[in-house]
Image (cartoon, rainbow, N blue to C red):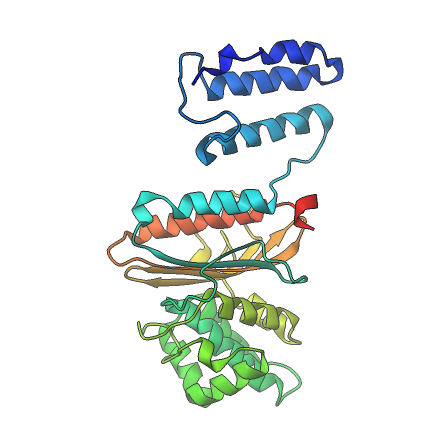
Length: 314
C-alpha cells in the first residue's frame, strides 16, 4: 500500500480552491502528523481504523471551526463507533456490557448494546427503591416530606446501604415496590430485586429497565426530588471525584454502582443538542480491576456528552 505522500499532494488541490486555503493548510498538517511519509499502512485510505480516523476527524472539525466558525459535529454514528472501540478493548474480552443512551424528550436511541441483558446492577438497585418510595408518598401527600427528602439524598447521593434497606422496609417491602414501579411503566418480569441497597449479587436488571425508570421519573411531578437526590459529577456524593475539569463537571446527575467485578453508572447528562439525555451503563467482569472498569465508563460518558444532532440522526 503506498504512503500518503504518493497520492496527489493535498496542497495542489488546496491552491485551486482559494477560499479554503487556510483550512487546507491545517488539514495538510493534520495528515502529515497522522501518517508520516515513511509509514506504510495496511488499510485503505478510504477506510481508516477508528483509532486513526477519530483524531483526524476531530482535528479537521476543529480546523473548520477556526476557519469558518462552524460548530464541530460528532454525530450519533460516530458515537457508536467510539463506544464500540472502547468495548472492543482486549481488556474487556470477558466483560458483559449493557448500555442504553436515549434523549428524555424524544423516542430516539443514540446508542444501545445488550439493552435487555439482565446484569448485576450493584447500587443502581437503589434507583428502584427510591423511585418507588417517591411515587408511593406523592400519592398520599401533596409534597415529599423533608425527612424522606433527606433520606433519599443519603441513599442515592451517598449510597448509604443501611438507609436503602431501611427505606425498602418502610415502603412495604419488595411487593409494594413492584406495584409502584408498575405504575411508573416498569414490568416486574424485567428485573429481579432482592434488597434495597444492591449489595446482593442476586439482583438483576437490564439497562433498558433503568432507562424506563429514569424517563418516568423525569416526567414525574416529584421528579425534581429524585433528580436532586443523585450525585453531581465533580461536585458531591459518590461522583465528587469524577469528571472534574471536564464538560460534564456539574452537568451530570447519576447513580454509581460498585461491587467486586461490577461497575455501573445510570442517570442524566446535559447535552447542547438533545437536552437531557438518560443513560445506563452496566458492566460485569469478574477479576477485572475496578479502576479499569470505571475509567472505561467515564470515557463512554464523555463521548456521549459531545454527541451532536446531525442530519443523519433526524
